[in-house]
Structure formats: structure tokens, C-alpha cells
Length: 60
Image (cartoon, rainbow, N blue to C red; front, side, top):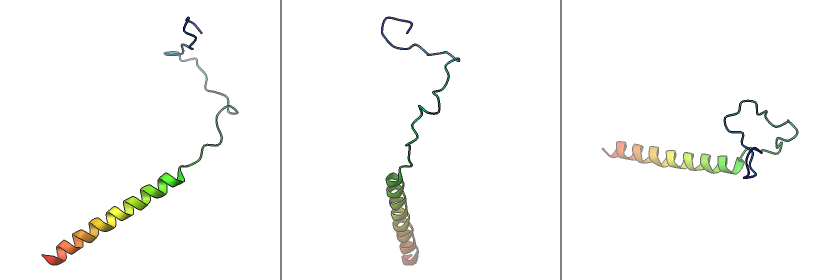
């Protein structure tokens, strides 16, 4: 703590070491719900888009 604000001033330093391995959170998981929702929306949009495309091609 180099100043009176109570904050660590490590900006611009290259000697700051990463935290030890036991401090890093090991409970990080993949966001399965977000991936499922994104995949579902992607499939739904593509099915409707290609369906409309095929319908327009067949009508013309």
C-alpha cells in the first residue's frame, strides 16, 4: 500500500506474481444452461430461416 487510499497500487508493475494455485477457485464450471439456451435458439432460428427459404423457393 503505497498511498493513503488503502488500495494496492500494482498498475504497471511486472513483478506482481499470479496467485498461488490453492487460492484460485477450483469450482469454476461451464455454463451449461447458457450453452443449452444458445444452442436451442440457434437451431430454432436456423430451422425457421431455412424453412422460409425453402418455402419461398418452392413458390417461385
